[in-house]
Image (cartoon, rainbow, N blue to C red):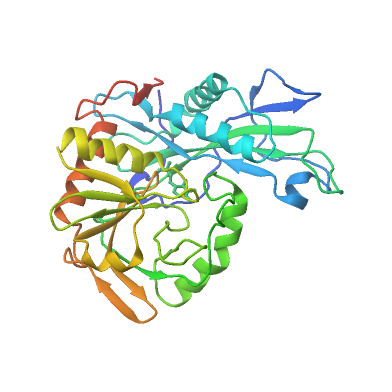
Length: 341
Ligand SMILES: *Cc1c(COP(=O)(O)O)cnc(C)c1O
């Protein structure tokens, strides 16, 4: 298959329209059979529920070319399951998980010419999402919904190596106790926009959010979960009902335990103990792990021993092992890699 003429390694993280996207509509209480279409525009009522009351959820995953030349996606069953959980919390119909996988396959196959070649560091980002589309003015869930999957090629997250970032402790909250922090809803991102723009203005790369109830425990950033490494090489990740269950973080915990033989702990992490960790990283699909070099707490700096030049040694091992599994250089646990082409 001929690839598109794109400078893969020079790509950023922006939207580029690809050839086909998948659409399925939910009306009269049932999903239609769904189809690939060419039209990238959506027409809806000015009073659509998504526009008025933000009834919308999404997922994010990547297709990429392995060392052998296969086009694969990583643990898409977990994205299907998470979207179903998001739908339940948002009073939306579940898009059947097997159909979710089939839709992702169809979109990747139809846009295979946009899947970056092995070794470029670029990937085809896949965005499944669902929203309430009919007119709603009195507050209630929509009756009709649209499920869509589009894809866009994105560049390597780290150009010229992963440099540690600097983050700040935010005074704003991302998610309320008993709220929607554990689902992938657009509303959680709307909440975080002011905080991230503020952080960037102040020269920080990201925000660390604390638990909104007590402001003593570490939650996550706007779009990535935390991993910490203790001085005796234990891998620790915060446990909370208002954290989004990152697939990357869950996979890294398995890698730490089963591939690297490290002790792992998912538990409440108090902000007070963060200064005692040896390494810190942010996990998500986009970067796998972004190393954190420093945390700024209202002017007081926590500097991790791993420094500002490179990832800490355990973070690096985790990163190399998981990306090795994804790229087919290291044998994957059963069911982690779905081959599409
Ligand atoms: C999507 C997301 C993550 C990362 O999850 P992955 O499944 O690893 O991509 C982390 N935090 C939030 C708030 C997210 O929306």
